[in-house]
Amino acid sequence: MSDPSAVSMNDISRMIDHSLLHPTMTDGDILAGCELAEKFHTATVCVKPYAVALARDALAGSDVKVCSVIGFPHGNSLPALKVAETSQAIGDGAAEIDMVINIGKALGGQWDYVAGEIRAVNDACRAGNAILKVIFETDFLPDDTVIRLCEICSQIRVAFVKTSTGYGFVKQPDGNYTTRGATDHFVSLMRARSDPAVQVKAAGGIRTLDVLLHFRSLGVTRIGATATESMLAEARRRGIV
Image (cartoon, rainbow, N blue to C red; front, side):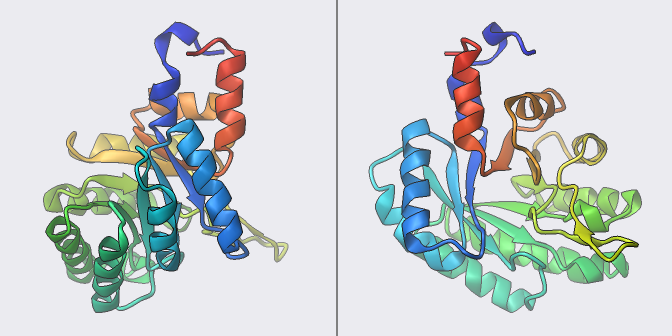
């Protein structure tokens, strides 16, 4: 159990991008999620592009920013469309952008393509005074690919590298699909192989306070989570203020 004196409630809540990305979410669900994020002062709400304006209006006057996902969840859009989607989201009120790389191009070693789309989206973010988090989807990737992505993102000077979408399901031998999301191995690798100025966001499977604090100890500064309320309730039970 973590020492309550080592971390504050604000430290915890400001690590969280409250995730509102499930495909079944209605506008009512998104508004309820924005209300919860405002109550707990999370860093952002993370929403799909069509919901950016809705979240912006719901959070007007609060300290919670709006984050939008781009090319989500599989990263398959053309680079020009990722840039257009980014610019639209920023225009609608997004201050942060989480963009999924083209995973097949990365696995194929087409690094000029991968770097080009990351740079183009990062340029669009900078033009709109937003920051970029680059989603790798580590469930699909070997270590050497993750290392090369960290090098590219460090060269381009993106704000964050991010492990997963939470929707990177891999087909198993029995035919079922599972996802691991953030793991110690990949979080540690990404922190070690990224420039110190590039932050690390962990996402996928982070559902307890202990897991959040553990990733914090590995150098993670932001997480994506749906279990925001239960994690912060546990922090209160432990006497964290």
